[in-house]
Amino acid sequence: LTATALLKKGTKLQVPIKQTEATVEAQFASEKQRFRVLESDSTLRREAERAGVSTSDLLERNKSRIKGLQLSSHLLKGTRLLVSGSEREFEEYCHWTYPEDDNSNNCPSYMMALKLKPHAERVSKSAQQLA
Image (cartoon, rainbow, N blue to C red):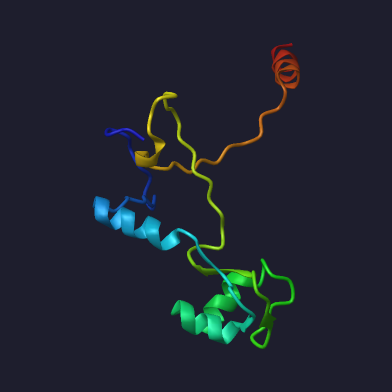
């Protein structure tokens, strides 16, 4: 899309909202995972109260991680509960750094990538298209 491009009638554009650095940091902090490791046997309801979250939220965040988890479940010492943040795990990726860089101050970048086919397969397909 260029500044002089003509758009067809009915074309919908998505325009990003300008965000402040504080807004972006708050959103990132809300998605960051926070875990609680139980120091003694407990219940889901008790741990939800301790973490300051609703029991249903705590259940939803952890039922895919802990097989058979229910509201009435008895939790054993050492159980690791996700108490806040997204269920999805993000892995930080930095595009470029030097060995002597301090990475603690770098902003994370979340990338999606398609699996590339081996070079031989890509070359053979392009050779077939030319023939």
